[in-house]
Length: 398
Image 1 (tube, rainbow, N blue to C red):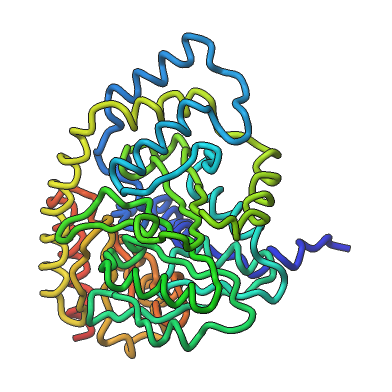
Image 2 (image 1 turned 45 degrees about the vertical axis):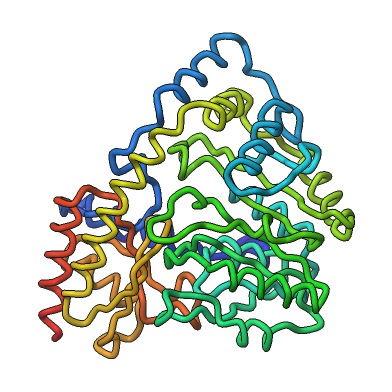
């Protein structure tokens, strides 16, 4: 008899990578594929800064090749506290910081420590799919609150409040947004915190794109929290161009100690593993060294954002709001009725044009459907080639 996988794994999906096999098959048949699916700037010509690479080499050469403590190197946790205060005006204690192997492990630690079967996590729709996947895996329910496309994917606060129930264990904010590129206003963040406080629900804030901002100021949730319990998630992959190094962190801001039991659970789970010691040594240099690359990267990305947004809105059958942060754009397919759903749309587009996108329903079946996510990380000539192919494809159905 064939041995079955656990029932917990059956509902786990990750659209960003699940679709890659289709593209790989096309490449095996000799077709050129333009990948616009993965948010990895290093894949598109952005390079990890030299001082960070040298710090890694130095760490390895000088023997920092052993296991670190489970919570992470003290020096790195102190540097994270410095960064959060300097950049985001968040006051933290190094004892309330845990270094993780990428932000995804931080998501795993958070969800596993706070969700029991039947519990609900309120998260933005559309949403980064790892939050949905892990909530489902631990037998909780991912409940998405509406974000408003016509307002640049700002949160619908009335919809959020309507979906709070006695089973709600956590409200999640992803700011700037993956997949939409939205940046929440300070007013919206304050209102979400007020809602959470009135219902005695903690807030988690994923702010991994906090330095990749184009048109407005970024406000960290932690800077507004005062006495509200906040768990923050952040990392080095995007801002510091360290995607393959797998380095992130999770922190607790909780002056009244209301999340002490949850944090103890996260700490217990974290003791089963540790992050790479050489990568952590380099992380210290990333936070305390030159940040010139950030300004250069954001300048390039803003130009590519402008180019992608303009081109997409010129293509028949597509419409998009303008991203304000990160490096994603989330257009709507206005004539989606030509296909059964958005997944069929992106598969047919891939087969006929060789352009790989991610179907919007992979980020939420309710608020993501009829859309797709694309990165605008490539240089403009490659983006132009991709959009030319998409334009020709859409004109076949216009």
